[in-house]
Every structure is written in C-alpha cells, then in structure tokens.
Image 1 (cartoon, one colour):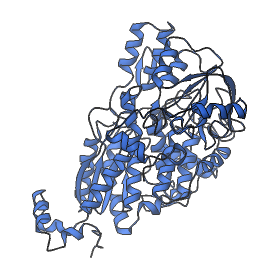
Image 2 (cartoon, one colour; image 1 turned 90 degrees about the horizontal axis):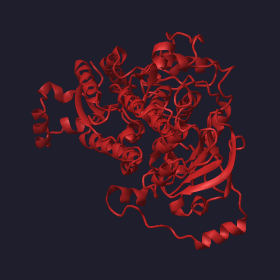
Image 3 (tube, one colour; image 1 turned 60 degrees about the vertical axis):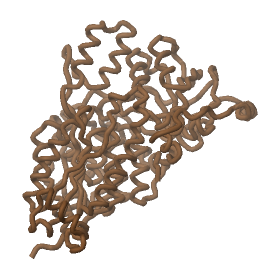
Image 4 (cartoon, one colour; image 1 turned 120 degrees about the vertical axis):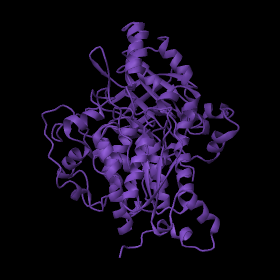
Length: 559
C-alpha cells in the first residue's frame, strides 16, 4: 500500500462538506480516483514578452505530463515577471526588485489557498529565482525549482555576443570605435532565442547558487534553455517530487545555514552578481536563518575567484555546459577542495556529496575555470565596505582587474538619467567618482538596477579610470570599479545625500572601506541644511513598497 502523500490537498478532497470545491475539481477534469492523489502546483514565471521567460510555459507542460505519469495531479499556474533587460534604464526598472515580493506573495497565495501538496517552480529571469524560493520557504512543503536555463550566445563579425554586448556597443559607438551599422548588427544578433542572459549575471548566479544549495537538481543551472538536457530534466523532475513527498522532505530541511553558505561560495568562486547579497539576505530571513552582511565578508575573505566568466571574463554559462561538462563538475571540484560542505540534503533525497558519485572530475585544459592553486583572485570579488559613506554597509564587486583602491573627485547626480547623459556626452573625466543617489529602495523607488552607466563607461574605455558609487544597485552584467547598496540611502538622509561635486572619496577594497574625505563639522553643517526630497511615487504598488521595504543591508524585504 502506497504511503499517503496528499497531506494538504485532502483537506479539500476528503471533506464531504465542500461540494462546490469538489464540483469545481471535477470541472478541471479530475475523476473519482484522482481525489486521493497528491496535488502538485506547477508554477512558472511564463510570459512571452521576455526571452528569459517565453519558453517556460512549454517546460511547464512537459513537467505536468511527467507528474501525471507518476500518479499525481498537476495544476499549472503562472506568476508575474519583469524583464530587467527590457526595462533597464527606464522608469519600468523600478518594478524589478519589488517584483520579487509580488512573485513570492502570489505563489504563497495560490499554493496555500488551494492546499497543494507540493510545488515545482520554473523561474527564468533575475528576480524570478529568489522570488520563487522565498515563497517555497514560507510554504515549506515538498518543492523543487527547475531553472529555465541560459540563452545561447549570439554571433556577429566572428565574435560571441550576449545582452551586455549591446549595451557596451553604445559606448563604443559614442567614441566612434564602431559604426552605426555595426552597432545595429550587434543589437540584432545579441539575443538569438529563449533563455536567461548568458553570462554570470544575476539569473545564472542565483541558479548556480541554488543548485549548490540542493534545491535544484544537478545540472539544472547549467543546462541551456533549448538543450535536450533541459527537456530531460523536465521529464524526470516528477520522480524527485514524489521522493520528496514520500519522505516529507521540505525546503527548510534543504535550505540551512550550511547550504546557504554553499550557494554563496559557489557564486563567489564563479564571479557572480552583487544582487546575490540582497537575495540571500531575503532568502535567509524567509528560512528563519540568522545571516547578515558580515557573513558575506567572512565568506569572501576565504573564497578564491576561479571563474573566468562574463561580465569580468569572456565566457558564458553555455561554455560551462559544453566545455566543463556542467555545474556538477565544478561543485564536485569544490567539494574535493573542502570549500563546499557535502553533507547538506538535496532535492534528490540524497546529500550533495552523494549526488556527485558519478560526476566526472574537472580537467584544466580550458580557460573557463582556474585551479584553486592558481586563481584569478585569491579571495572573493564581493566586498562589503563600511565607512562614513556607508555605516550600515555597501557592496562592491572587485575582481582585481580594475584595481583595489580608488580615490577621486565626486561627480554627483540625483538620478541615473542625469548620469547617463553626462557619460554618453563625454562629460566625465578620468579620476572621477560618479555618485548616483536617490535610487535606493525608497528613493528610486525600488532600487532600480543600473547596467547602462557601467556599460557606457566600459564601452567608452574608462573602466579603469572611473569609480561609481550609488545607493541603488547594479545589474549582474555590470563590471568596473562599482559600489552599490550604500546604506543608509540618500532618501533616508544617508551621508551619500550630502556629497558635493569636487569632494574627494576614497574606496579601499583591501581594507573594505569607503569614506568621504571632509571634516566632521562640515558634515554636520550640511546635515542641518538637508531636507528629504518629495517621494517620486505617491500611489500604487511602488508607494506601498516605499512604506514597507527594509534597507538594502537587510535585503529589501517587505515582511
């Protein structure tokens, strides 16, 4: 006799005094024999207006068919998404980070209200991934995440392209390095089909981390969106959701402090996005795990950078798949080197080490992953900086290629748009520290991601001669000497609101400091003269978000 695994759905299907509920379930196609089966919510962030998400509905259908074959009931539903690439540099980007909360809230709402016994979530774009995991941790019932997969690279003029190539092309066009025709051709060929942006940007960073955490199946993060491997994963995931149901293994059994550290360590080894800091603070909070900015710095001090991946290197996630053999090969290597903890439970029902039993060893006849003994950088690229500019912390992404110490004169902008105009009109001189403020979680609002300014800087050839600091955040595609997440933010009266053009700012990523070099009495004088500007939004969801959201140093959570 099979073990009863419909622990939640039976509250509807087995209750005789819920005739309307039963009538509606019959309307969905359920038969009498189905009322004793476990119900799986299959949620995707599908919408066809974004390449990261436009294929997720097809993946959901394959998964539903596989669930049915396992004698389970599968119900597909969708939640929202926001394309970071399409909204980047526009007012729409203010909704990107807040969408994470909407995603989590909507999944929690559907699954909990409909009493589904388990969940298979299919995210694609950046905020989708932490959004679905936050929901699964709140719900805490058997669940698996199936990543939508990375996009294939584009090609033009003999060069591999991705979405960041199109942004950087504008900077190259502005300094007449490329023609208008070349610029257009780069744009047309950067994104050839479905899948998340191809470098170690936020989506691939988070997917890699979640695979190392064990909440995804092996290979999920590195199998490309259109590959046979991804299709096979969708066909086989039902085997594992059934194991989780039978063993009653839940997300909080898998997501522990050790597994969170595994995810962050892998992401740092690979040169991942600074957005992982915001997202892991929120994930830890949802799992009731004590994890702070200082934990990131402790990890970064010990973790070498070995991934030669975009945006700081030349390679893409597809190269990990084709040339390395997939993410498990890297995970196995880091387990052998004692960097990852192998005894963490995973969605296979086995430990992370057990999952590596038949995984081949890494070979170093490639330039994508460097040996631990000969890293790109001996410690992590993500640095948590403190100082008078950021007494509650700021996040830097320093790979070493841009140097580790920068001192320069402030060039201050109260919006991204103002900064972008100055950069594209060649108004920024070498030695400047660009300051973009009033773009934090409350001031933006929504802490909009900025890829335009960093890409324009890199495309203009100023990447090693300019620093950029902000109370906003950066795209996973950003690189250069950039510091974000400065807290307190300008809207709340943080010191960043008092910086003036010509002030000297020193950033030291060796000692993890960022300071405005003016006297304390001058700071106090400016404080007395400062008044908070009016909120940029006074109605709708973003106004609610301003009222609820925590600071970046706490993960921008709203609960």
